[in-house]
Length: 105
Image 1 (cartoon, one colour):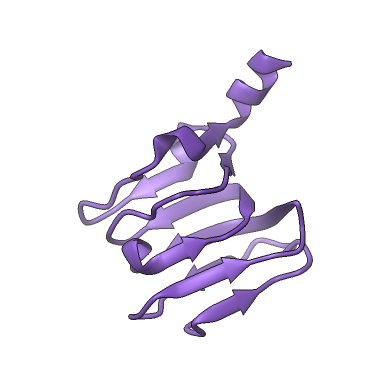
Image 2 (tube, rainbow, N blue to C red):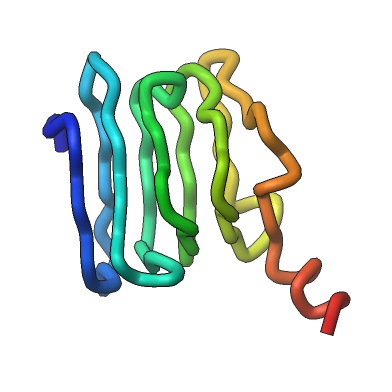
């Protein structure tokens, strides 16, 4: 998806991958309290603003750059995060793994 502003107002079902690959600033927003997607790939993570909490059910792939997180990003475990080409997570305090949720209950 290359639109500058992307609004998704329902969970995404299935096995597919939502690919955000604009070469300019791109924002993702949702009316869901936590947007659920099966897989998410950020081609230029440093140009992507995730303006909503997101649960990635299977795999999050960062192709390049570092997204600046301001909302929780939920993953099942550390293996669900794939960092390529020197990509990284800049705001790790917003990265939440399922075992952290279980431990806090």
